[in-house]
Image (cartoon, rainbow, N blue to C red; front, side, top):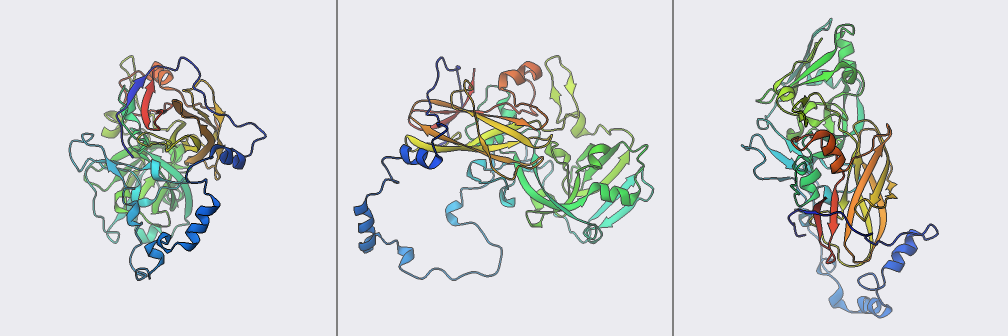
Length: 436
């Protein structure tokens, strides 16, 4: 696929035509009617030739395969080597403070493989010995604890599917900068099955002071000793102390051997390499809470502790850098999520927001997790502007970029949940654009 620079385009003057499904038309008929030539239209003679012509039998069918490897860690096919995290040059001043993006355009369903989960590091990746690692719980508690990994894994465990999204995901789109692919526009997000202990269980064991304890400070064991304040109502709800991800122990880049998971809240709060939890009566105003991960509003004020990730969605196919191979049927698909709970509905437009159709939501639809949506589309070869707009169970509606800028200005970096627009060119190329 060819990556292309972003552009700003005017809003459509007229309706960009796109074939609509009639209520009585089945999806099978829709696909059949849209495909009249090309690879799917194979004649009977072609089938006969394929059965009798030995030259059409591929070489891997005419010989033994490679010996089966039954030990070691399984790896993807070499033909999928392009599916990987990618860095954006110039975003961080040094390699230890790095950002790498999840290849959303290559993924299916809602679970992100651990090996392509996005990364955000503040001072490099420590190599933590799990036998020596300790978790301290102290502050406004009756029984301060110093727990080993063996201690933690003896507590009752839970497994839950949640997303983690960096607060800066989509930050480059705040201005008129349109990076080429969905991996760079929205790739600082991933969704996994996490296994660990509810933080409430550990706080109960420590005897948290529920009268005075209003906040929990989480600290990591990396070189920056990254710290974040967590409201006690979050800590006593669905926050987890995690050691497992997607059925195995955490990867080093995802916080091995222990991390915090604060569902629905910007990723920096899900502190990796977790070493300390302190219960206090007020926020700590640490560096990452007073200088970073805050929003500069139009009146010059900073919006602080705005951690909940608002309702958001993005189309991943077709998306920037891809190319449609010709007219006919395509399934528009993408991801939606909300830090406030479940996604209730996703609407899709193919004409830049003039008309909307409700997409199908793929099960399961879970709270504070990615939700896959799908819509049938018959592309007639005319220019199209693809958008998705999500609504969550609390009634929040994903805004367009103009609605967001009207409230938040243009000087922010964080918490961009605006509608994303992809332009399909007549030649099938898909570009990232911002509708003026």
